Image (cartoon, rainbow, N blue to C red):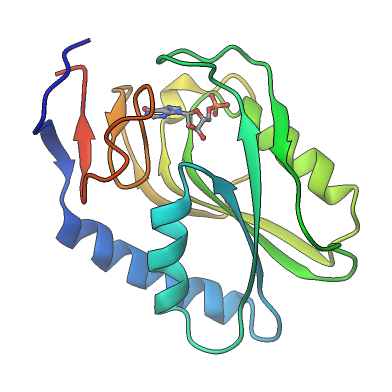
Length: 174
Ligand code: IMP
């Protein structure tokens, strides 16, 4: 895996911003009353912060940290909760905000544990989806971009904790 200071662009900042604005409008339309967003740390922190600034009206936020990949580019299939939510989900209209669905193992696990906490609505928004890598069929109601099987970094996504600060989605395995 090459480590480059300026990885090749897969999705530009402008294209991300335009798509995030569209997703925000769709989400607000589908959540006319309450909207409680759960962002999955660390990867979703930039997507979440751009998304919420495009959503008009009331939104509340909480964060959860999961560990699925110890370090590197392949899924271990093991998921652990590193940081849990601060508030209950009982009766709330909840939207999970994730960076990327790859095998689907992490999201399936997360949806299961959150559904058990009694939200009225539970849907998921992912900036990126790699459907060709799916090991388990998981519901994602809002997908920013469907991408091929490449390892991507930037806009919150990392490789060994680097590249999260890139303002675009780049490709590392170029
Ligand atoms: P899954 O459980 O295989 O769906 O993996 C989901 C998690 O793996 C994501 O939330 C990311 O943290 C990480 N991940 C999967 N693919 C990539 C990638 O291409 N770049 C960076 N992280 C990735």
